[in-house]
Image (cartoon, rainbow over all chains, first blue to last red; front, side, top):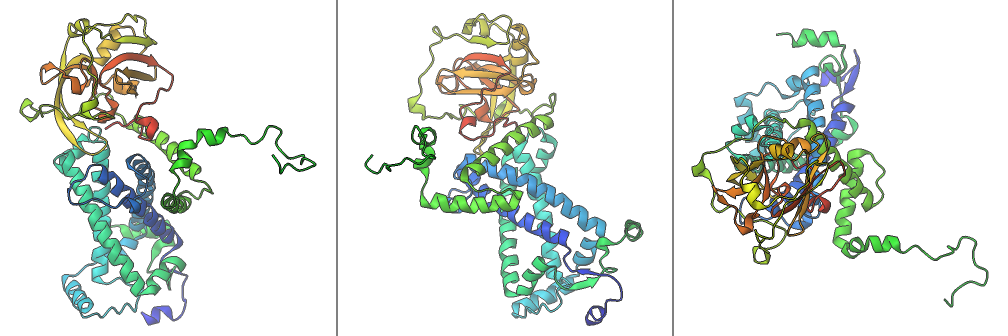
Length: 229
Length: 263
């Protein structure tokens, strides 16, 4: 990749354009509020008798307040999430950053991680495990929103509710998706701290990439050509 | 007041400091402790990031949360499908007896005597004559077997019968364009629902559970059963009903739970 970074033949843009950075951190705050208020809501009627979340770590000071926080952050999470998915699809960022995922590459990557070789020299290219994790967490968050809608409105969205078998089925899935998101968060934050330049890149935009390879800000006409099957 | 200055400052309040704010917020002040303050400041920081507002006070956070909850009332009213029916179930799924829930324990329950009981009517209703339980039993009966969902997260399937609330409201000449139907109860519980939910085909003034008169712990002789509302929106031991355009809130709603609470 060194050659592409050598000379700005065309226009350049940051690896993470400003819009992506704003959406990333908005999502981070909204998701943490959702998780910590969700734990207080869970505590009001636990699914597993052995599991109560300590009150000091929850947001909302009890179920009433926690529900208020949850139903505030949900709008931010959903609106931001729709904007993010719209951006990722329309600019080709998803296709460029997250695809393709090869099985052989995943296995090789897991081997090198297990061997504690966390070389992450090229920030502009996600490896196969990263791609899998990012696609996976986007999918889990979509499931989390759908199961959340069913818990909130099991009658208004009764057609959707059947997908989760029952009200308690939706509650259980909502819980399991939370576990998956928290698991992702722990790995994601740990790796970002091990390779701090990834964290810096999400703040300052990171290294420049050629605009052509990332048509985030290219004219609309060229998108449509590229998106055409 | 030995420290009173010789020359009173022109800015000194004439009648001392207004203590009413302290009085009004007594509970809040007593509730302040270090951990809550720390957590509150965390929440405060989070909210500042979320909204970009200059939130400088815990009360401001509460105001924002309350405003969002009211916005959520409107969003839910907008999403409400007036003729969309809640899923119904077969009688073998019905849980007997239902689950007791009130703002006090079942031992503290004060049963209602049927002979002393009356349903009082108030507000935008043309025929406000009170009803005895006999008269209500004589009304046409509708049965629904629907899922009861509590805001806490538990649920059960219940079989409720009674008069359809829309039919009852029409019968007593209620103004169906009013905003709210409000209830008061023998146990001092109170609540109100939006007119659209009151007129939903699966909203009943229930007198029976599993084809038997509702027993004392579950709201004898009369309770609301709206299939489109969370459990706490269904007052039990109802003693009066009012059709009104005036906001009446509710017992749990006034303690911070969302008012619309439709499901």
